[in-house]
Image (cartoon, rainbow, N blue to C red):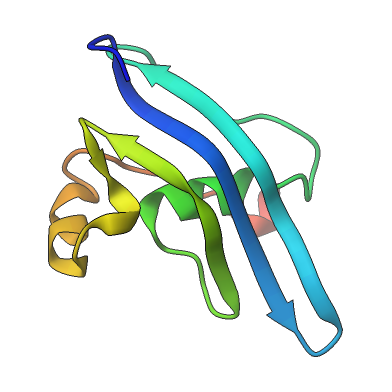
Length: 104
């Protein structure tokens, strides 16, 4: 990660395990967010935008699980951080604007 990159997502995989099988909600997603930039995830309904964002925030609901990948924020892999440190980053350094499901 270079000094101009704020957040680097590498090969992110997030799956949901249900009675009906495995749903691969996010498969191999990689992208960078440069410092000072605003980024929007856009795509068709059900393509994994929300699960990608929830994965970055480490808020994937059960039965979901981040299977692999790296979420490098300011030189630290968010997946390796203790919960307390992640809570301090959420809202202060990384935020998410949740959509209203009835209006989307």
